[in-house]
Length: 95
Image (tube, rainbow, N blue to C red; front, side, top):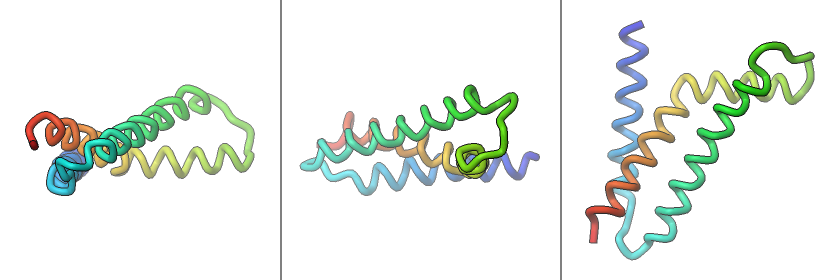
């Protein structure tokens, strides 16, 4: 379990570092769009747990939500959080 937590933390730091490095000061609008997209993905991740968490009939939406949830739990959430933090720091400190 510690190994999986360490992988998740490394993914978050890698996402933050990559977002910091990739952000160009003249493209501030793109950075805000990246933050918005990552926040929407995290919101969909949370909403899928709330909506489909307890009981869902077997359907295409349920299967897609299942794969989305496990993909986000395994690493997508960490990358989204890292991207939000890295882009926000880059917006604040890169000129």
